[in-house]
Length: 231
Image 1: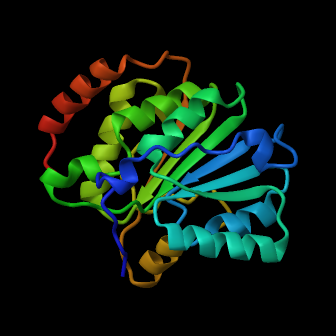
Image 2: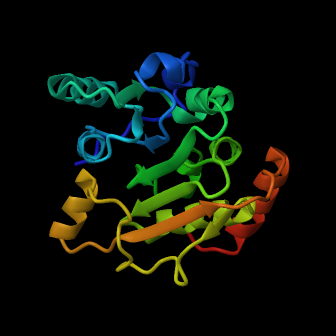
């Protein structure tokens, strides 16, 4: 069972100063993959072994999961992997602004906490502020990969990314549940969904050369799009 935490609670709204990329990795010049909501870290622990030519950073709001992932990382002595505890909509946004150009090459958001109720939409991880920060940090051609086993969660995420005009979706049918995972490793939730016969909705976007919208414009456009969708 998923254990949710409210990202809007006072504790999680306190900004955390995240370490600079140069202090996280022995080779900060390598392309960077950021996995948002990395949970217990098993996905990135495997990815780091299979892709030593990449740096991998997992960010997670549940501190015990971060500590568990860090313990496993240290056992494997992986130098191209790190895990950080933070609320991404508070702390990662600022961190992305200061990383070197062209360093971030892909971002994944896999099976985020669903927060089904409309009044809880602001608790969902992909908010306009975070998407704008990702769009500014990703170079043209960079990847944004999203997946969920809940259509009511994937639809608003697709709507937000489409509203930004900064990404091209590589799927003809963006909600095709048989679309393949582009990575050689499955996340823990993806394995659970597959074993239990749950649908898996995947979205793969490429950063285009459109400049990011002003945040207020993106929020307005997204709100218009949300009114056209039933969540």
